[in-house]
Every structure is written in structure tokens, then in C-alpha cells.
Length: 76
Image (cartoon, rainbow, N blue to C red; front, side, top):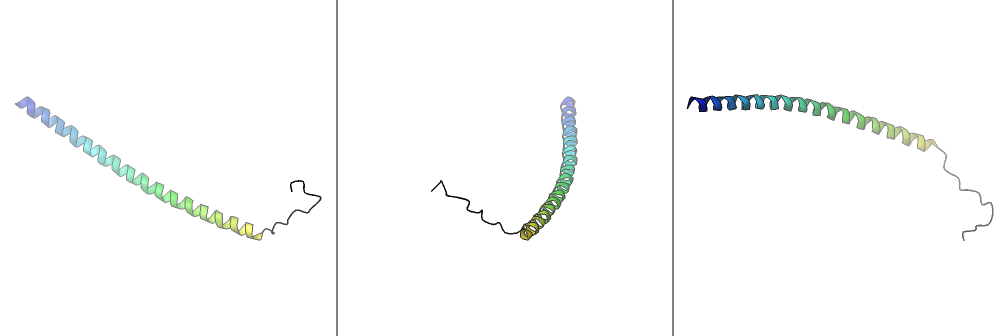
């Protein structure tokens, strides 16, 4: 009977340690998720800013001119 109780106590202690380890890992993962979310938001902001700058540059470029007709078209 005492051996059964000792075994049970040992298993309960292991379970408590596992639960604590999982709690700690969960906290670490939450912190990593928060950091990754912040980094993702910063990168999205940088992409938006780069897109705006590219759009501004494209708006300043002259409109393309059609190519000059230099001879008969062989594809018609």
C-alpha cells in the first residue's frame, strides 16, 4: 500500500513539474509571439512606406512614347 502511495506521489510530482515547465514554455512563446507581431507590424509599415516612395517615383517618370514606325510590319 505504501509503495502504491509513493508511486502515486512520484507521478503527481512529475505531473506538477511538467505543468510548470509547460507554463514557463507558454510564457516564453507568448513573449516571442508578441515580439514577432511587433516586428511584422514594423515590416508592414516599411513596405507601405517603400510602396508610397515607389509610387511617387513612378508618378514623376515621363509617359512612355510609342515606338517610331521604321518600316513595314512583317507581322500583319
